[in-house]
Image (cartoon, rainbow, N blue to C red; front, side, top):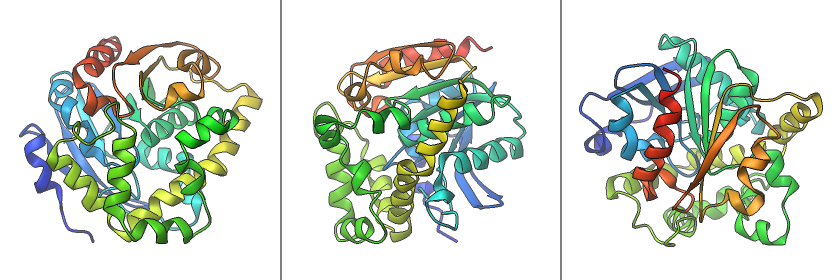
Length: 306
């Protein structure tokens, strides 16, 4: 069992947020829960943990019961056994639906950033009865990224191909300097191309989690899934005409990653029946780079479900 590292970031969250550690069929899922109201599940991305939501946690907790898990394999949550298929968005979405049911929530609001956004839209496709409303932050569907992978976009998101290389190549290279890799990656995706947007306690938490060899492997398995089974699931849904039926809010960084692969709203309208959203003045990390604008765009959409 991993040690409880949540105390190091407790000061970033309201006092009434409690740590959770729930065992499921594929291992423990850890994180935080706080607030009162309709349940709202917030999912983080690579290379972060649930701590990324700290700038919005207090404001959202005034309206919602906020559930902040570390994705399987990230932060303090267990890495499921198996190959890339074990980190497929379909399997992770199933884990998190089970988590929400364990917490007493058969249906809920949903928001995901980066890899968490990919879990979120897969959840909305596979478990439509569970998702009341969904928001995705600075992503397009996995199929859309691979379809648009020209020279310019490949240089921008080189990590999609790098992390998906066969084990143990990316794991060994990253393990030689994990803090350097994490810092370089995160800085390069911000509008200012530095780490100034990240609270010191949050950045320390990301560095600590990412330094562990099993966390590095989890991230690589996540991206291997993205290049294989996740892509296959997306292509099957497109071919079958499956669409997200829950209202979908799409937010993206004006200087982020998603616009490089297409016009976000136009792309998402091929995947969902009710799409709205806008750009945020930020890079990829909307929540930490521009929390006020992100909250102003996100909160009315979520409250409309009440």
